[in-house]
Structure formats: C-alpha cells, structure tokens
Image: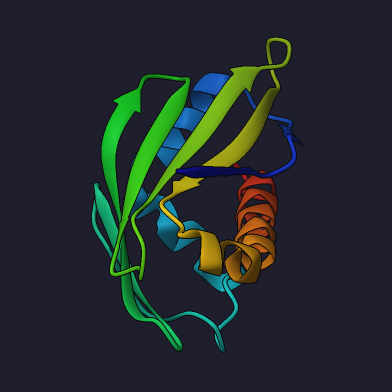
Length: 136
C-alpha cells in the first residue's frame, strides 16, 4: 500500500465549518463551476456519494465510508483501476481558521508505481487546492 499526501492548505474558516460543508457531498453544487469541464463530466451526487465521468477512466465514484466529526472524512474510490482510499484531514488553526490535507492510500503494484505516482500526487494537490478555495 502506497501513501500520497497533498501539501497542507490553510483555510480562513473554522474547523467545524469546513467539516460541516465537506461531510455532505450534496455541497458539491457550490464548487461545480471550479471543476474542469474537459476532465470532469456527468457529475451526480448525494449526501454520501459522488459519481463523475473522468475520461479516459469512465465513471468514478467517491463514497464516504467514515466520518470523524470535525476532523476527518474517509472516502473510497470505486471504478478506479486500483483500490484507493482518500482521507480529508482537518485540524484547527486558531478559532476561526483550519488546516487541511488530502491523503490517499492506493494498492499500486511495483511496475505501475513510477507511472502513476506523479499524476496521483498532482491530482491530490489539485483537490486540496480546490477545497481550500471554497467559501465555507
């Protein structure tokens, strides 16, 4: 199992506000306009699940599998060529600010590791960057 991490992002909103917004995937509605249309199509979502068509992978589903109130949201990726689990970790940074990091663990065989490591890290960084720009 390989682990990949985004850089830590500072968010000018409280830990509780950030968690409350991210723990319900229905709130994707507020960030749809920040997603690249050429890379993300046919977005559908509910409280616990979001499915998107990502060329060339096809449909990929993010499913919340665990919530640790105010601290962490754990998601499982379905439709990916390999098992991937993602954590969105949120910690306080004073009373009205938070820090966030996105972590992924993936079962990647040795032969593919060098090919997917950079795109996976770049993807995590883009996710973290997009999450840090949301108005919570």
